[in-house]
Length: 365
Ligand SMILES: [Zn+2]
Ligand SMILES: [Zn+2]
Image (cartoon, rainbow, N blue to C red; front, top):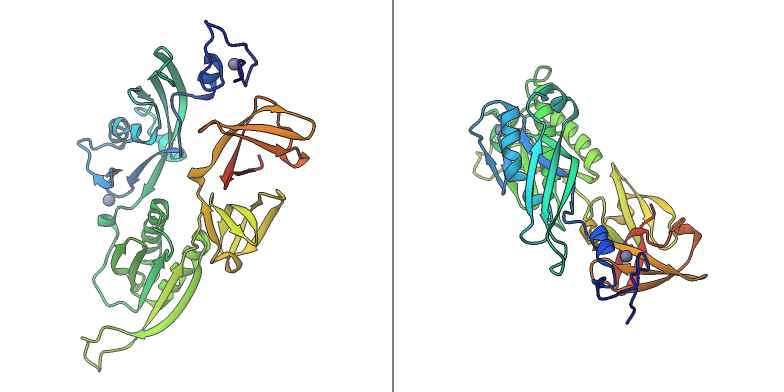
């Protein structure tokens, strides 16, 4: 049993009780009360100002955007913050009077004050998290998507066959389609959506013209990454034969993985950092080299872990040949061979990586 703090070397005593191998000061430093698993955000419909909370679009009692945001913060922000039970939060914003900058930057700044303790052997203390950025995600809620009654010539499917569609993908699709309809309808009478539906891994739009459907498809597949497939099929059987006509079906298959995922390809762990069009880039976490590969090559790759599985490790000691890293979540200790490819990793420094079957893979800075 070691009797000194892994981080600062302080010797344990009656006064300084170690908590999971760390002295109280270092424990508090390495375990902030609040952690932010993802950037804070508020999602709003740009047409009706409703905000998204607990899987529903909420109509605020307020009418101006400033008050809507200011009042929605207290509901929307706390569920996005991880914290020990019984931690109290106090949120203050500078939204009122800042409308122009809000709309220009699509962010607001809030201060959060937290009261609680990172470990139940500690006394209650306060921590303040000043100037936290909150992204305003403007999208279009499904009830505001412009739909125009009329015939459709094409059907556009956006599919995630191996996984659920992410919220941000859905938001992007809706807001993109709405913008394109607004932009194109002046030039092209058939640039409209006549109906749409949404399922877990699929959104379908019925599009006024083939041309508009193709334009939407190529833009969406570029921005989300994805493979396109086009076919002509007969429409519903209920339509009389004379009216029946071939309809264009376009399917966009989004990749089985998203940015931040860890793939396992040819015995190598690949960390995906960007997907654009038909190109995927990231790092091989064994060689730490960057790669850029065609999406086609990776389309059936095994997804090992997601960005939410990324762990933090502290480098608590090193020898000539190795680093000793401690997983800050479960305090397991790993020894990895030193290598210049990890850059300068100092003792006490925290680094990020994945654990796969007892082996850790560091993500380059
Ligand atoms: Zn310490
Ligand atoms: Zn709306």
